Length: 579
Image 1: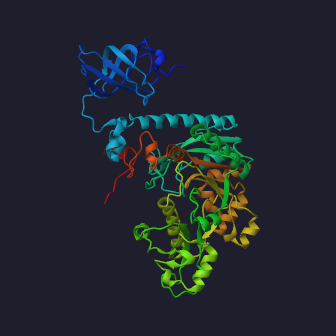
Image 2 (image 1 turned 120 degrees about the vertical axis):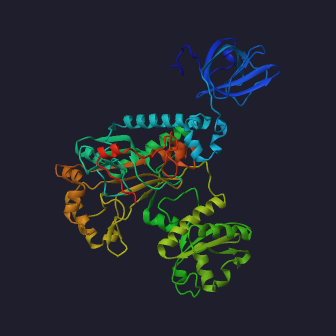
């Protein structure tokens, strides 16, 4: 099928003409990309989403065009005398015979289209329709469309049924803040936009559907960060009846292998690496490790258990060995400043020279016993540096994970064109809250591993059939085997201090449905937008949306969020109190 319709505006697009088309009469339509005059001729490049074609206007023709005018041009394809190897259409040009202005650009452009990625975010978003004209954004939109199509085809080919679940639903007591929608017909009551279709997809399993999926819009009132939109996102949502964790892994690994083969030309061989949650926290101080980074964290707290060195005394101490070679003091100071900017107390280090001589930083505080046991634990050598983070346990883990990532970047250890996949598995089911009581660690509706009797004996040893897929340090998917056993569910909540009424009242639909016969089921939600980030090497997730919010959850284009008039508020029984 032709890319464009043959009509009065055009009979071909601006990216398809080649040397074989010389002599043809064509009609093109698009935006005036650039204008230049040379030797009495006017050269115009015409742009659409498919590409750019050069058009020539003769000396005696009056050309009254502005950049970004929308025009239709009829002319004859010629072979270029001076070819442009950087343009797919660079072997030809079109000698114009007539031009019709279809849409005049009457305003001064707020920025150059081709350089709009350099413009401050709010200006880009205010004129997003102009920013989207840039070639890189046109390619992003096309890739997003192609990826959506590819995912849907894969899921249909694997016997998944696509189902749209409600956008207006009940507020969830778990997770992030909800976006609430007041009900006009039910005064004082509110809908919530779904944070995920979690309950609905599980209800579909109870209803007899075998394999469900959708590309689901999800809404969470969260603060923005580089890899998280502050309002909405899309996920590849799936659920499978009579399924185990291994069944979900097989589907997901197959999907991601197919995606990266199709869109990046990369073969991902073998099963994805699996790392237990506790091992990931031990070795990387993170539950989403970037495995392109070879550095590991080692806990050396025991080595300094009896130290009098005040920086380490009574602290959790984490160490990272890195091959740094000869570095100036500025390198170490920069790393120290990095950690301090994240509210860490500082950074300790020493440098390893010939014959294992230690210099710099905290070297003078290392006893002979410290040196021996550290070398045994870390295996350092000439040219290495050893970095230490010491603090309360949670903070030491947090800052050591940050330091590992920063060292990977500063030492150029990460291949930006590589992709490393890993499953993080066996998440703890319970944890201690601030008062030392039993609390749910992650998802209370995941299926724990082991019997309820075993869990009661040692709740903090219990792990769940819960899993994340991590790609290059980004949590790209989260899922679990679901707990479909009502009795076990009640007992698990009781261990955390909740009685049966909490489950019945807060999750009535799901809990009641399970009393009518629920199959074992498992599933996941994979971040579609984060996948786009990875495929396009974008640093900010907002750059892979057609119309994103800014980091303050505002839309400068449509001026949202906005105030509404008193009548609209009265219709939904809302009175504002902004004091």
